[in-house]
Image 1 (cartoon, rainbow, N blue to C red):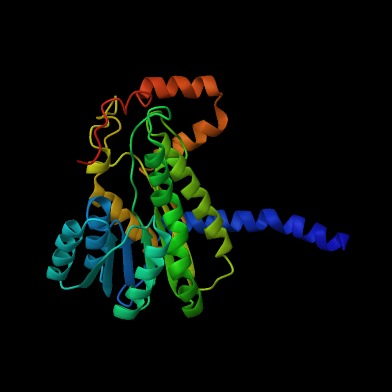
Image 2 (tube, rainbow, N blue to C red):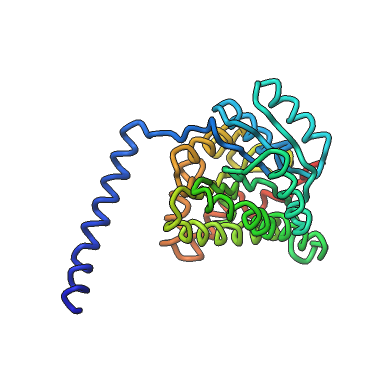
Length: 302
């Protein structure tokens, strides 16, 4: 038994070196992209913002069918008509992902009307942009229900069939705030950190499930209505991301089967600094960058 353990111990660094070299080679060589022509893609929060751009991008790259979920019919209808004009079959369903019974009911309706979902994009999210003491209790619960628990319900609704078909992909549009929180958005940061843990655990759990994978996208501040009014101290140095850029990079990550994607790449530096610098130094970075006060002018979606 001791020789078996010793062999595994000696083999481990060789495996690590192989995986690092393989990843480096993949960065240089053109990747083999997933063909989306047989995929039915469901996007939560698909009526506007990043969700609308995700629907466009999946349609542009040849997805078979696009299904949109959201709470506002006007936005869903407009996006659906736009996707159909692109030549892609599209359907929408009114669904609040924070409502467990509604998610399961509409998931059944989707399967009956459209067919099996092979790519689920958990994009729906809300932010109230207030401190803990200024937050309404119901508003705090709402953000946790939609941003975090909603992913539990949607994934439980569609993952079993993906596992049965050995064909599926779970996608989470998260936020870099899951890794580095800011004041003034305590509900959002908490829910996104929980969502990140959910996806990390799910991704590891799918390692032994052939044909089914997961992708978590963690973008920097994106210029959408949801974070309207948020101000970065050095916008020229740290410009907000365009939603179409986030959508494009997300679909590429799905096609390349990339587990985690930080946008932009400079966010990797933030993660490294947070792991090695003392708390006092991190606080000075937050003060210098203006993240302590960036939510002071927050207005949100009107």
